[in-house]
Image (cartoon, rainbow, N blue to C red; front, side, top):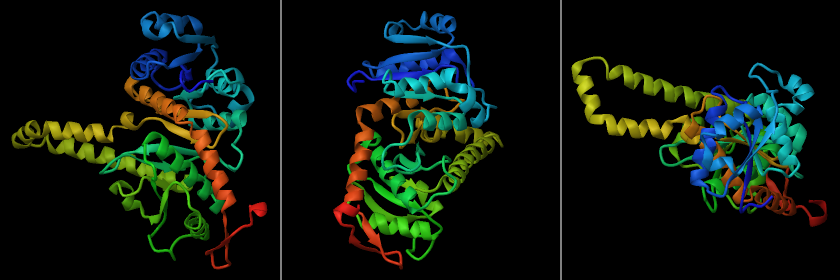
Amino acid sequence: MSTANPVIALDVMGGDTGLSLVIAAAEIARERYPKLRFRLYGPEAAIRAALAKAPRIAADSVIVHTDQQVLGTDKPSQVIRRGRDTSMGLAISAVKAGEADATVSAGNTGALMAMAKLTLRTMEGIDRPALAALLPTSKADMIMLDLGANTECDAENLVQFAVMGAAFARTVLALPKPRVALLNIGVEELKGTDELKDAAALLRGVELPMSFEGFVEGDGIGKGDIDVVVTDGFSGNIALKSIEGTARLVTGLLADAFRTSWLTKLGYLFSRGALRALRGHIDPDTHNGAVFLGLNGLVVKSHGSASARGFANAIGVAHDLIVGDIARRISDDLDNFRAHRPVLTPEGEAGDDLPAGDA
């Protein structure tokens, strides 16, 4: 496929809000990126009816009919057995077949991960794919991975995640040398598991297009001093849910506080602009679009409850990764790492590089 005219496969039957929202999101995305084209997977009659109200994308959209879908209650094992002909399965297969440059779905996360990995397989040099997403901080957006694809990771996995996360940041956030750190229980070099210490030693021992900053604690994620936070999927998912829950708690407490008396209601009138800006900054729709990095093809996951604007943002993430040729960036960085990979001493420190033939 050509990155000049990206084609994105849309699973129109995934998510909670229905087919019409996906079509509306495609229209919004097309306004932002006029060269986008779409392949739409779902019931043909319903898609055609929706496209009748969306003439700007109708002419450049291909409809692939299926009335089968992956449900939110389906287990990944069930989907692997019967999901090939679902809207999700067909959209992912389009990437493998070269009919689309990326897939965007708001469907069942576990099923999407399982089917994407089975269909597309992992890139050479990547042991496991990772789920990465944009998150807000007090300064600018940052990236965290893994957010749930891998509950247990060794040092090699964490190094690969760091390479992929840095490539993501260079592509989507336009950062030439993103600041990367490993999530840990402390910033001191002696703290953490052996896997974390070994990963840190490997990342310190090789010159990569990133600035490795060592470790970051949970309370440092939102400060904006790190561009890419790397962790295993177990810790990453807990951190993500904690961040999301805290955001809801703060906004809820603010709303309650402004309703307590006529004085607080008056205060709300004077602070509406600031509160609107805060809400926009932490709005999940603004940062919608998690990516399964490390596969031989791009798959982007939208929130199931995302608005049309939020789903359009997920399509935008897919567009940026296609145009930025993230697969090449990851592959080049992995080749560089393997060519100059340091040898770890028994103490977990980086020694001399491996000879090129042994890398």
